[in-house]
Length: 213
Image (cartoon, rainbow, N blue to C red):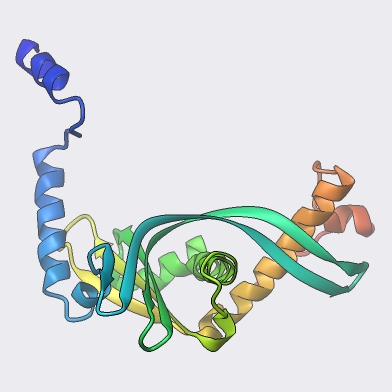
Protein backbone atom coordinates (compact mmCIF):
# COMPACT_ATOMS: atom_id res chain seq x y z
CA UNK A 1 0.00 0.00 0.00
CA UNK A 2 3.04 2.29 -0.18
CA UNK A 3 1.89 4.09 -3.35
CA UNK A 4 -1.57 4.65 -1.90
CA UNK A 5 -0.16 5.94 1.42
CA UNK A 6 2.19 8.31 -0.41
CA UNK A 7 -0.69 9.56 -2.55
CA UNK A 8 -2.82 10.26 0.54
CA UNK A 9 0.02 12.12 2.23
CA UNK A 10 0.55 14.37 -0.79
CA UNK A 11 -3.15 14.85 -1.57
CA UNK A 12 -4.76 15.24 1.83
CA UNK A 13 -7.29 17.74 0.44
CA UNK A 14 -8.69 15.25 -2.09
CA UNK A 15 -11.52 12.79 -1.53
CA UNK A 16 -11.03 9.33 -3.00
CA UNK A 17 -13.99 7.66 -4.69
CA UNK A 18 -14.36 4.37 -6.50
CA UNK A 19 -14.56 4.02 -10.28
CA UNK A 20 -18.21 2.99 -9.84
CA UNK A 21 -19.02 6.20 -7.98
CA UNK A 22 -17.10 8.25 -10.53
CA UNK A 23 -19.06 6.69 -13.39
CA UNK A 24 -22.34 7.20 -11.53
CA UNK A 25 -21.62 10.87 -10.87
CA UNK A 26 -20.58 11.44 -14.48
CA UNK A 27 -23.77 9.79 -15.69
CA UNK A 28 -25.95 11.81 -13.31
CA UNK A 29 -24.20 15.02 -14.35
CA UNK A 30 -24.84 14.21 -18.00
CA UNK A 31 -28.50 13.42 -17.37
CA UNK A 32 -29.01 16.59 -15.32
CA UNK A 33 -27.44 18.72 -18.02
CA UNK A 34 -29.74 17.12 -20.60
CA UNK A 35 -32.92 17.41 -18.52
CA UNK A 36 -34.85 20.44 -19.76
CA UNK A 37 -35.79 21.62 -16.26
CA UNK A 38 -33.10 20.23 -13.95
CA UNK A 39 -30.32 22.00 -15.84
CA UNK A 40 -32.20 25.31 -15.48
CA UNK A 41 -32.87 24.85 -11.79
CA UNK A 42 -29.34 23.91 -10.75
CA UNK A 43 -27.58 27.15 -11.55
CA UNK A 44 -23.97 27.97 -10.54
CA UNK A 45 -23.50 29.74 -7.21
CA UNK A 46 -23.57 33.51 -7.50
CA UNK A 47 -25.75 36.26 -8.94
CA UNK A 48 -26.50 36.45 -12.67
CA UNK A 49 -29.11 38.73 -14.26
CA UNK A 50 -30.81 39.41 -10.94
CA UNK A 51 -31.01 35.75 -9.88
CA UNK A 52 -29.01 34.84 -6.76
CA UNK A 53 -28.15 31.13 -6.32
CA UNK A 54 -27.05 29.29 -3.17
CA UNK A 55 -26.02 25.65 -2.67
CA UNK A 56 -25.70 23.83 0.68
CA UNK A 57 -26.89 26.97 2.40
CA UNK A 58 -26.99 26.90 6.21
CA UNK A 59 -29.64 28.95 8.02
CA UNK A 60 -29.81 29.34 11.80
CA UNK A 61 -33.30 30.64 12.49
CA UNK A 62 -36.20 30.84 14.93
CA UNK A 63 -39.57 29.15 14.61
CA UNK A 64 -41.95 31.81 15.91
CA UNK A 65 -45.69 31.30 16.15
CA UNK A 66 -48.71 32.32 18.21
CA UNK A 67 -50.86 29.45 19.44
CA UNK A 68 -54.48 29.88 20.51
CA UNK A 69 -55.98 26.44 20.97
CA UNK A 70 -56.16 23.45 23.29
CA UNK A 71 -54.32 24.35 26.52
CA UNK A 72 -52.12 26.95 24.85
CA UNK A 73 -52.53 30.71 24.50
CA UNK A 74 -49.05 32.07 23.98
CA UNK A 75 -46.27 32.97 21.57
CA UNK A 76 -43.40 30.52 21.22
CA UNK A 77 -39.89 30.79 19.81
CA UNK A 78 -37.65 27.78 19.15
CA UNK A 79 -34.11 27.78 17.75
CA UNK A 80 -33.82 25.84 14.47
CA UNK A 81 -31.24 25.21 11.79
CA UNK A 82 -31.62 24.07 8.20
CA UNK A 83 -29.15 23.07 5.48
CA UNK A 84 -30.71 23.65 2.07
CA UNK A 85 -29.40 21.81 -0.98
CA UNK A 86 -30.14 24.69 -3.32
CA UNK A 87 -32.37 27.74 -3.68
CA UNK A 88 -32.54 30.82 -5.86
CA UNK A 89 -33.74 34.36 -5.19
CA UNK A 90 -35.12 35.92 -8.36
CA UNK A 91 -35.21 39.65 -7.65
CA UNK A 92 -36.77 40.35 -11.04
CA UNK A 93 -39.92 38.28 -10.63
CA UNK A 94 -39.81 38.15 -6.79
CA UNK A 95 -39.86 34.35 -6.73
CA UNK A 96 -37.96 32.01 -4.42
CA UNK A 97 -37.24 28.57 -5.88
CA UNK A 98 -36.26 25.76 -3.51
CA UNK A 99 -34.60 22.60 -4.83
CA UNK A 100 -33.86 19.47 -2.83
CA UNK A 101 -31.78 16.65 -4.33
CA UNK A 102 -32.64 13.03 -3.56
CA UNK A 103 -31.04 9.79 -4.67
CA UNK A 104 -33.40 6.86 -4.94
CA UNK A 105 -33.50 3.21 -5.95
CA UNK A 106 -37.19 3.41 -6.94
CA UNK A 107 -37.47 6.45 -9.18
CA UNK A 108 -40.50 5.04 -11.00
CA UNK A 109 -42.36 4.94 -7.66
CA UNK A 110 -40.85 7.98 -6.04
CA UNK A 111 -44.13 8.90 -4.36
CA UNK A 112 -43.51 5.94 -2.05
CA UNK A 113 -40.29 7.55 -0.84
CA UNK A 114 -42.01 10.93 -0.47
CA UNK A 115 -44.62 9.39 1.81
CA UNK A 116 -42.24 7.10 3.70
CA UNK A 117 -39.68 9.79 4.51
CA UNK A 118 -42.17 12.69 4.71
CA UNK A 119 -40.31 14.86 2.20
CA UNK A 120 -43.19 17.34 2.05
CA UNK A 121 -42.63 18.21 5.71
CA UNK A 122 -38.94 18.77 4.99
CA UNK A 123 -39.77 21.13 2.12
CA UNK A 124 -42.33 23.02 4.21
CA UNK A 125 -39.79 23.40 7.03
CA UNK A 126 -37.18 24.73 4.57
CA UNK A 127 -39.66 27.28 3.21
CA UNK A 128 -40.20 28.56 6.74
CA UNK A 129 -36.44 28.86 7.18
CA UNK A 130 -36.15 30.84 3.94
CA UNK A 131 -38.98 33.17 4.96
CA UNK A 132 -37.26 33.84 8.29
CA UNK A 133 -33.97 34.48 6.44
CA UNK A 134 -35.66 36.87 4.02
CA UNK A 135 -37.38 38.84 6.75
CA UNK A 136 -34.55 38.98 9.29
CA UNK A 137 -31.37 38.90 7.19
CA UNK A 138 -32.36 40.31 3.79
CA UNK A 139 -35.02 42.71 5.15
CA UNK A 140 -37.53 41.52 2.53
CA UNK A 141 -41.23 40.87 3.03
CA UNK A 142 -41.79 37.16 2.20
CA UNK A 143 -45.56 37.73 1.98
CA UNK A 144 -45.03 39.70 -1.23
CA UNK A 145 -42.97 36.93 -2.88
CA UNK A 146 -43.91 33.72 -4.65
CA UNK A 147 -42.41 30.33 -3.77
CA UNK A 148 -41.71 27.26 -5.88
CA UNK A 149 -40.58 23.87 -4.55
CA UNK A 150 -38.95 21.01 -6.43
CA UNK A 151 -37.33 17.69 -5.65
CA UNK A 152 -34.73 16.58 -8.17
CA UNK A 153 -34.75 12.78 -7.90
CA UNK A 154 -31.85 10.75 -9.27
CA UNK A 155 -31.67 7.00 -9.76
CA UNK A 156 -28.45 5.88 -8.06
CA UNK A 157 -28.48 2.21 -9.07
CA UNK A 158 -29.35 1.42 -12.69
CA UNK A 159 -30.37 3.98 -15.27
CA UNK A 160 -29.23 7.09 -13.36
CA UNK A 161 -32.43 8.66 -14.64
CA UNK A 162 -33.22 12.18 -13.45
CA UNK A 163 -36.77 13.38 -12.79
CA UNK A 164 -38.04 16.65 -11.35
CA UNK A 165 -41.13 16.76 -9.13
CA UNK A 166 -42.93 20.00 -8.27
CA UNK A 167 -44.75 20.55 -4.97
CA UNK A 168 -47.37 23.28 -4.68
CA UNK A 169 -48.87 25.06 -1.69
CA UNK A 170 -51.67 22.50 -1.38
CA UNK A 171 -49.13 19.66 -1.26
CA UNK A 172 -47.44 21.34 1.71
CA UNK A 173 -50.62 22.32 3.55
CA UNK A 174 -50.88 19.18 5.70
CA UNK A 175 -47.13 19.25 6.28
CA UNK A 176 -47.39 22.74 7.74
CA UNK A 177 -50.10 21.57 10.12
CA UNK A 178 -47.83 18.71 11.25
CA UNK A 179 -44.96 21.14 11.79
CA UNK A 180 -47.14 23.47 13.87
CA UNK A 181 -48.27 20.60 16.09
CA UNK A 182 -44.79 19.09 16.39
CA UNK A 183 -43.16 22.41 17.28
CA UNK A 184 -45.71 23.13 19.98
CA UNK A 185 -45.18 19.63 21.40
CA UNK A 186 -41.44 20.31 21.40
CA UNK A 187 -41.96 23.66 23.12
CA UNK A 188 -44.16 22.03 25.77
CA UNK A 189 -41.51 19.38 26.52
CA UNK A 190 -38.76 22.02 26.76
CA UNK A 191 -40.78 24.16 29.17
CA UNK A 192 -42.02 21.28 31.33
CA UNK A 193 -38.81 19.18 31.11
CA UNK A 194 -40.75 15.98 30.53
CA UNK A 195 -39.33 13.72 27.83
CA UNK A 196 -40.18 10.12 28.72
CA UNK A 197 -43.51 10.20 26.87
CA UNK A 198 -45.31 12.31 24.28
CA UNK A 199 -47.27 15.38 25.41
CA UNK A 200 -50.61 13.62 24.83
CA UNK A 201 -49.60 11.05 27.45
CA UNK A 202 -49.10 13.71 30.12
CA UNK A 203 -52.17 15.77 29.17
CA UNK A 204 -54.60 12.85 28.76
CA UNK A 205 -55.40 9.47 30.25
CA UNK A 206 -52.20 7.84 28.98
CA UNK A 207 -53.58 6.60 25.65
CA UNK A 208 -52.22 7.78 22.28
CA UNK A 209 -53.58 8.00 18.73
CA UNK A 210 -52.22 6.53 15.51
CA UNK A 211 -52.24 8.40 12.21
CA UNK A 212 -54.07 5.95 9.95
CA UNK A 213 -54.38 6.12 6.14
